[in-house]
Structures are given as C-alpha cells and as structure tokens.
Length: 225
Length: 225
DNA sequence: CTAACTAAACTGACCGGTCAGTTCAAATAA
DNA sequence: TTATTTGAACTGACCGGTCAGTTTAGTTAG
Image 1 (tube, protein in one colour):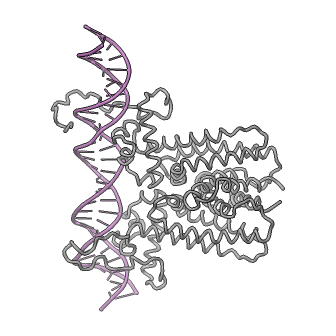
Image 2 (cartoon, rainbow over the protein chains, first blue to last red; image 1 turned 180 degrees about the horizontal axis):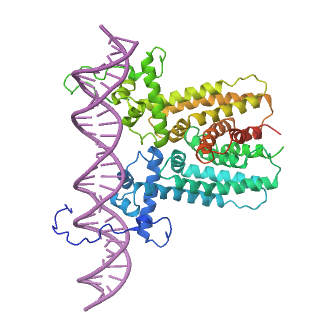
C-alpha cells in the first residue's frame, strides 16, 4: 500500500516529522500516553537483549524495531537516534539497579549484613538483566565514547550508594587504614558485574551465595582483625 | 572460518588467495621469516589500539591496515579474515599477560607476598595494554560469540595461574572454608581488569599500590583471623 | 449516537554511503 | 627464485537516518 507517489500532491508540509517525544530526556515519563510508554518499554527490552548478545555496533536499528514488533520509523519517532536509544537504555537499567540497591533497609543493625544483602541484590540484578551488564562492561571504559558523560553520571550515582554502605561499615568496625576507600568501592562494584557475568557464562553451577561470599571477602579483609 | 566459497565461479580456479600463512593458528611463529613477524607485530599493535577505542565492530579492516602502514591485502595475506585477526590478537595479549604472571618467582617465602606481586604485575599489564583489557571485557561474556572457544581456552589458562597462587596461600595459612575457591578466583581475576581500567578511565590519580591493596583485601578476608 | 475532525503515533520504502571480503597483476625483498 | 607485499578495483550486502503517507484514539459538533 501507499506506493508512494500515489496521491500526487503532497502539497502542504503536513506533519513533517511529528515533533514526537524523541528528545525527551527521561523526564515527564508519566505524562506520556500509555501507547508510547508501552512502545518504549518494548524497545528497551528488545534492544537490551540484542545488544547484550552482539554489542551496540553489531545490532541494527532495523533488527531492534523488528524484535520489538514495531517499525523502524517508530524507533526514530520515540528516540532521536540509535545513540539516544542507547543512552536512555543505560539510564533505564541504572534506575532499576539503583532501586534495588536502595531497597536494602539500612536498619543499621549490622552494616556488614546490609552490605551482604546489597551485593545479593546486585547479583540478582545481573541474573535478571545480564544483557545490561554486558552493555555496561562493553562500553563503560571506552574512550572517547559517545556516552562518556552519561557513564560518568550514572557511575557516580551507583558508586554513591556503594560508598555509603562502605562508610557505614567503617563507622561500625575498625578498618584497615591502608586500604583506599575509593579503590575498594571500585573493586567491589566491578566485582559484582564481573562475578555475575562470569557465573552466567562459564559457571552456571555456582550459587548466588557463593558469589556474594566471594565478593564479601574483600569487606572482611577490610575490617581489622 | 573464511567462508571463501572458493573454486566454482570466478572463472579460473587458480590461486585463490596466495595460500600464505593466513591460517596459522598461532604455532610455528619462530619459523616464519622476520619480515612477516614484523608485519604481524605492526598489525597487532595497530588493531589493539583501534579496537580498544571503538570496539571490534566499530573498526574497519581498512583502518587497521592504514594504521599499521600496510595494505589491506597484506592483512588478508597474513590473516584469513577479520575474525581470525581478532582471535590471534587475543592469544597474543594473553601470552604477554601470562608471561608476566609467571615471572613472579614462587619462592614460597610468603604466598601472600607472591599474590601481591602477581596482582601488581596484572596492574602493570593493564596500564601498558589498556586496549587489550577493553577488548577482553567487551567480548568475553558475549554469548554466542565468534570467539567463544578461544575465550574459554584463554580464560582457563589464566585462571590456572590464579588458582595456583590461591592454593599456595591456602596451603600456608588457615582459610575460611565458607569461601568458594572458584568464585574467589573469578572475583580477583575480574577485579584486576575492572580496577585497572577504572583507574585509567576515571581515577588516574590512584596509585598502583592502592589498587593492589584494594584487590588484596579479598585475600586478607579469605585467610582466617 | 455518530459523523467529522485532529494530532499523536506509526509505517516502510528509499537514499547516500560504508564495509568485509575477494581478486590479481605488478613490485619488492630475501 | 620464491615468499611477501602492494594497491586498486569490484561486489554484494548492509546500515543509519529520512519522509510522505496511513492508522489510531480521542474530541467535538450536529
């Protein structure tokens, strides 16, 4: 249908690029009509899976659209570009991970137990969204990268939570002053991704608890004996 | 590998690719003339840098050839395909890293000190070949991947060394039996990549020693108090 | 109640351009 | 002589982004 050229005229510029929500930067999600949110959700899920398997550059927008059951044009209607889609995908994933980390009640009963639970939440997230983890480790340390600013911001948001958890431990226990707080944050944060991915790819028989315990070893080494 | 679709069409079936050293699988390097080794070395260096910056799919064979100061035909003469080049690049990098890890004298004086030095060697390697580290974390957990078998083999080779170092510690000190040996290997091995890359990308002010100490925290948490 | 209207949402063919891989005759080095 | 390299042409597929036109859902007018 359509066959282009048909109706001849085309006269007025009528809806030239519908000025859709393409440039929304993550705000006002609630205000958007239900259809759009459903479409965006489908696009997030489809692109997450595909990109996790073959990488950002290895996946085409056509494939993403097809997997989401939507036309290519819709992708460009909802997002301004492939790059935009990725950036919002990163934010989407971090929002989910952050929500889980913050769900850990900091009831100050035992900061070490809270840390344990937080790492467990992270492992669950890696299990549930392995493609996001792959996207993260694939693009995070690229320099220069289109998403450098996005990564810097998101990384900081996540590390802030880890930092708070470590601070709580340091406040409740005597800790080894020789260990740099920042490097420890990075090591634990990074280990969550790596151990989670490694378990999924090479050692599916390893349990969640084993992974958490291994990562927690660094915390137990941090508190003084 | 090398789909080729040789013979058949293309009129004369003669000389389908000069039957050069393209399909060498890493063996017999010594036997190869000096000129070839020099060319291969240049190609390794050039592709390592480019791929580290933009990823495997983001770099073209033409770019690699140009950066190495060599023609595109030479790439296909020395390697059968882009995929082959990557596979051999991975082996090349792992050979270097392995050599460094094995250079740590296991004089059994103190297994913990040996471990410390090994992690230091790993950090030096990440400093010197950051692009290799990026390539590794970008493609390692992809599934399915063209280099899945290559990764499995190389990963095993590297983990064997880490495993031996941990075993030496476990033999000399009382260790926490609740910690799974395998998960700990993975956590330490992965932390080396992540901490090294993170330092280079986001925290260049952090010292080598800080990084090593942070990673070693997990070993100190592993030995009993 | 329903026909007309409207704008947001969506479609998919199409375009300019790129890329991996191939081929080969001629040049160059060992 | 023989292994290696060159450089340029070629192909066939693919890709990101665009845009004229269609559908859908909600609203208003009669």
